[in-house]
Image (cartoon, rainbow, N blue to C red; front, side, top):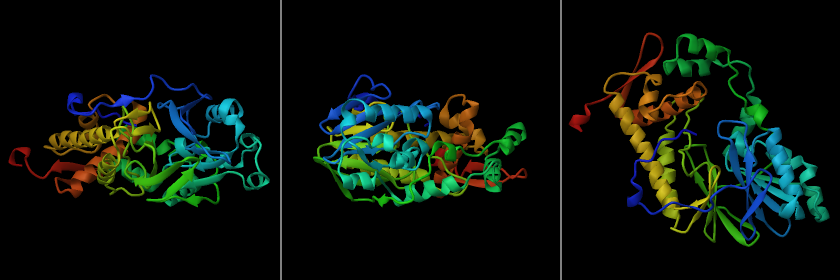
Length: 374
């Protein structure tokens, strides 16, 4: 995630209200409402946690998102489902909101894990095991990424960063780096799944959850809206941070910003002032519509900063400081380069900037006209 600070004054908006002061400890479960539980799992990355949610039905639990394939995530899940309230029923369904490793990394392990299915249940459930539910894009993308396991960057990945302006020692280091750790963070994706899509209604326990699909952060990202005012948003709506909108070398012309803005606008209209957002990271909160407005404003502010910066030609890498307004750490560079492409592609397709290929095979981007003439 890359934080782009909100530009909307809080006194002009409906208050965003955190539901709790703190999160449950790893391996502990917190009941938010009858039949609805919150778990926080540890991640071994800069973003050190993920929230997952457990929904109760008479046959067992449905787990929404799973955490990454790491020992600390697996241990936290095993503790949660073997002790306390969650030990009384088996795990019967896993829902993946999108294909990123912290959200589906343990789906395959959970489907096959007998340690999470030891609670009393019917013979039918014992034979069936847990069922994986997700969007078609999530399932396909995850399966493809697991098969695309290579030790060094491919030509299209090298061209991608070179076009962004990477050169010298940084480019030489990129030539030697392992391009992805997806396979190590994701257990084998289940070979079969149940598709969820826009408008589907999942009846789980006493609630009906309607699926609404967002885009931008991940293609066909599922969010779940209950009939009593809860919404599980994955990474589509987050408090305190803006979700990363990274363009991939496989689709270098993608305009993820347009997809993101459309999704935020649509979700803002679905929410009421009392809708409780259950996000993939940070603390659950009320004020979904306000947060969506902030996310839209954050993107527009970043685009405006970028336009100002492009009064003169610059490479994508030269634009990082203008957009993020801080010194980036070395581990952030690849992610932020991919996101800068998203901003540039959006402005390019809107006709507000142009690009030219320089002699070193990098693109120089620049505004089409002076801001004073607009």
